[in-house]
Image (tube, rainbow, N blue to C red):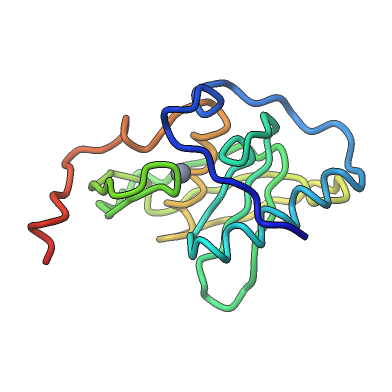
Length: 157
Ligand SMILES: [Zn+2]
């Protein structure tokens, strides 16, 4: 495993639409393992493949709730709750920038495992927020576009 470099928002890779994963091979598994190590080192909640320069529909999420690192390959949101949450958000590709976003309280999604098996899951709270944030990355969208109010870091102290 290796820690990969996390791209900054200025990199054009982060503004492109990612392609689906077709081969569930050793290369994908290495990417996932490297992304896990990269996320742990950065102490982030989620990481999308384009953030490490790979334009494929791969996301990992760890909400530190004891359920471990979730791997989402070719994920699609299939349902969003009408109930929303107003949450603080940041991004490993946008260091020092924080803001409030309005995200669904719950989402349902389908995705594939690292071996290509489809599964469905319901996510709530921080997990739902992370699913929305990371899936946006796969379509070249940064959370900055979703911010309803930016947070001045000096006011937070
Ligand atoms: Zn992000």
